[in-house]
Length: 252
Ligand SMILES: [Zn+2]
Image (cartoon, rainbow, N blue to C red; front, side, top):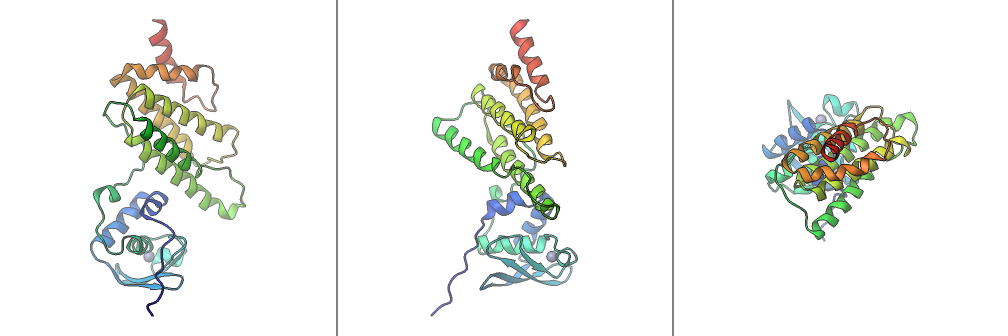
């Protein structure tokens, strides 16, 4: 009888969004250059020898890609290292090549210069993925020892949202979608108990507000989406430049 297959409880998307950019990129390069060797499924996860500065014995849990150990300097200090991430990538890809899209790491929202609206089906998919990403931006309840994990969750949420925002075409429809997203995030910060002391979520809000300004330059009908902002007071005034654009367009 062959032993039962160990299936990782995470996928590449999870690994990518929950890891910081430099670590993810180094892990991809280890994976692609065949530095993950002697990969084995064991009862509770995956083990491998990763060829770094020297060969490191690495173990990664099948439940959480960031639980495990590595013999390197970081791994010994319980910090997620590129070797562990490389083994996790191996576990989900099974040695198969990564596509460019797989490797593409979006750390910040970017402005796509394609114009157009989403179909009804696309819009509803995007709304679902926004709601899913927003779950990572949650109130802080824990004791200080889980603080680091909590900050990671906020970063993961913002990376997921960045990938969504960067994929959107420009139109009044998507401008409205972004305005609503910013209002939801603002509410989480103002009254939702999200502890953004690192400024991760706040920074993301400002970046998206800047993208909205760019929207108006390629499609002035996007300005109408800012009307909603006029009557809302927000936490820290990110909406002011957008309201100014709206007022200028409407009253001059
Ligand atoms: Zn390591």
